[in-house]
Length: 357
Ligand SMILES: NC(=O)c1ccc[n+]([C@@H]2O[C@H](COP(=O)([O-])OP(=O)(O)OC[C@H]3O[C@@H](n4cnc5c(N)ncnc54)[C@H](O)[C@@H]3O)[C@@H](O)[C@H]2O)c1
Picture 1 (cartoon, rainbow, N blue to C red):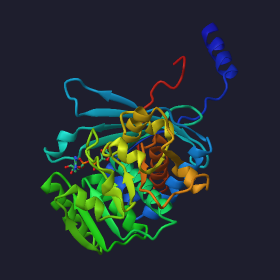
Picture 2: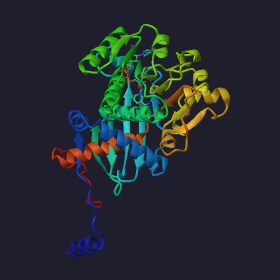
Picture 3: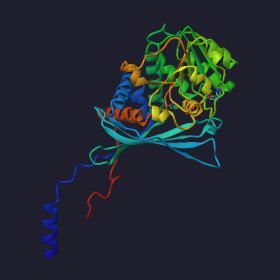
Picture 4: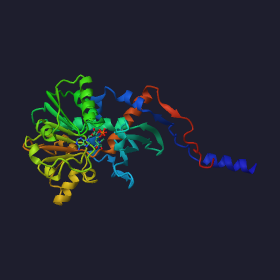
């Protein structure tokens, strides 16, 4: 009797617990269904996210690299982040890169994205995230291509240096955002990759004459827009003279260019503190010179008119890849799947929801 009375008194004294959202799992098939054909909206979403980040409405600490002494080519990266504005979500991308996967016939990267509720902190979704990651990377590259070429003739000769999954996504995003090319150059150390990419280009119905180059120099010299998407860990392009025609370079793989090329170029990044880490080419340039004078600014600085893009030098965009972009695209997918009524909820995922049972 006494116990019952005390129990009832305790319950009436406790405030109503905030609702905990059911936990959902979103598969790669669902992610792809939402994102396919939405390339224009996704570039706009990435632009809006860069602007929120530039305005300080985000938390995006450094990525954490988990490396393995016995498997030096592999890594798993944690990207925690929080983005405000109309997106309003916290979370974490956990993405692994195992380059040897490619020989085994599966993609190099695999990933999940966790979304956390801003009020309770409870995770409310786990999404397959290799597609989200490739999508936000390609959307960012297409946005940069547009913003960095507005004061020069639009490039009609594109060169893809390293042609795996990311190069394919970037081409798809460029084409869907109105880019067409007279010439498409392809260069890869692997003849199989070059042939696979060529096949993709032909099937995508892309216009433009396709050339598979066997010389890196030739690819660069013949392209006004160069896309680096290799898995090189150290600079392998070292001669600034190859860039004497001042192309715009989307340096998505971050470690291809020798610091001398960075120093001879105008450089833009997505986030200065992020990009000057982890032995990226801009990081090597900083180590060489002891300063950051070679950096013109961020893409957000270009979009908001704070930084000018010169036309008398090569222009290099090195995007480190921000967790806030993954969150923005992931939340977009979550909202769309919810709207369509296809959300797969794991019942009772959070089982202990009363502090005292
Ligand atoms: N900055 C970002 O936000 C971001 C996001 C995602 C991926 N990435 C980077 O993009 C790169 C490509 O990713 P992916 O999934 O397409 O990889 P992938 O393994 O599918 O393709 C990489 C290709 O590059 C080729 N390659 C490797 N070294 C080369 C070299 N020195 N010269 C020419 N070709 C070379 C390989 O043969 C392969 O075909 C990776 O470095 C990855 O880390 C960057």
